[in-house]
Image (cartoon, rainbow, N blue to C red; front, side, top):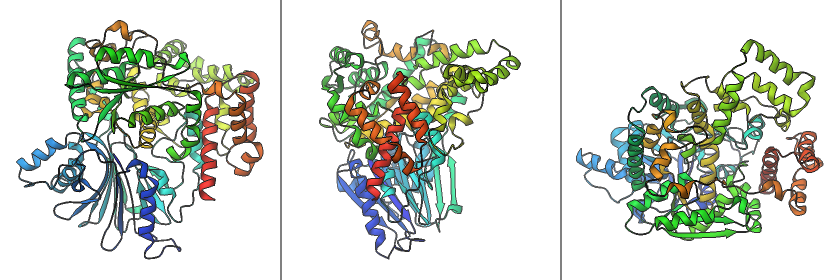
Length: 638
């Protein structure tokens, strides 16, 4: 796990750039992401300085200098700076040797194998061979083409864009923001999406002229590295994987499905446990992480290291249940009980940690469990992905329940009625607004999307009400034949990569911990999409086939307890005097007016609904995290 950065034709339109400023700026980019790679720093520049690469290293495989980056291919044609892990690199290396493409490798790193695979098979074929997580920058010195590549699901970040006419890229948005001449222009049109969801989805970022490369894509830019020379193509598609899987459903029994899933997960976990540093796993009391830890332990002769944090508030505490699971599996278990003071102390760190507004409040406990885990291991496996791939969220049930009621009313009646309720005199109330919107839904996907848009006031928080398209708004009705799978796919296209994986990556990398997610293995993902829905959910119970695997290792009765979630009592905190004072300092009317981005009247209406009438909206946390980020930006830019 590392951080990458670079630029092309530095200073093309920057009057302040001199001939030596490229080195100062790449060093600044590297320093800003030191947390992503504390072990070493590297720089490479082409002979004419038209392309410059930076790298920060967290050494995981081949800890020697032979694994250092940026790295040049054996022939000298290609140069790479790369963040991530290729889990099947030994198989690729064997193929290169067997086919006599390479006579020997200088070291034992996956970076060198990836570089030689590109040399001999081409970029797209080489990347398609890889199973792993990665953000890659690769320069072809012969053809003068720069490639940026992101992994299939979006585990690793990769930002790109233009600063003063120069093409730039980095793993960390903060690394771009420190460049000389960066103007910090906020992309106000994306704020409507942010205040709806609490994060900014790809391809957008909080800044104008800076984008996120979408998962499964290859970006190419040719000399002279101007916007007109950019091309983007997909080498793998979550939508196509889902469509193919649902068009060719698994025909075996549910037990056979569990057998195959267990085999694929063991294969993925076995590959992801390979490292030259200590490896462990997060363990909550949930199905997903328990399955990962159970299979890890079954593959390991020694004791797997597992980690849990506990909360003082029993409503949010899963440590006791996780401890019982760990004891049953025989792991070397570590748990840490955190206090409210511990959790609140994380809040001032979040703006710099995420580099752009991000407001999933479980970012706080995720950071704390990562920090504790890093004291013992350098790599930790995670159970993320189980809910989205195996129909686990209760929101899927409630969405279909609502849609089943709505669809019974003929469309020519309910849609006009919905418009009347939403836009007429009754629409002034939140409840009638929600009912009116839902009645206008065309399918379950629209019901799901509307569940994020429960109050029109939320769309007025930002003064600029942008209408940018994104994955949920662009999702085609009935893309898949089964509605559960449509909603799951919507989440795998946006919520999972742009919320869950961002949260895990940024919080873990803030403490230099590499996280790996076995359920996002390519073969596991493609198999999951081939399952019929009744192998995944029956009634209120989801993740059936995943449970079938887990119950082979952990007794069912040990898992049959309510899921408490990985969250914190933000709503309760904000009623306390100190936190309320902090919040109200961030939304001070004069401050908001001077910034000119948010509507003070709307912000205070939402806040007073909460303080005076007890009406909680998640947008309150979204606003506070945006304002905390704004204040941090002002301090940095001052």
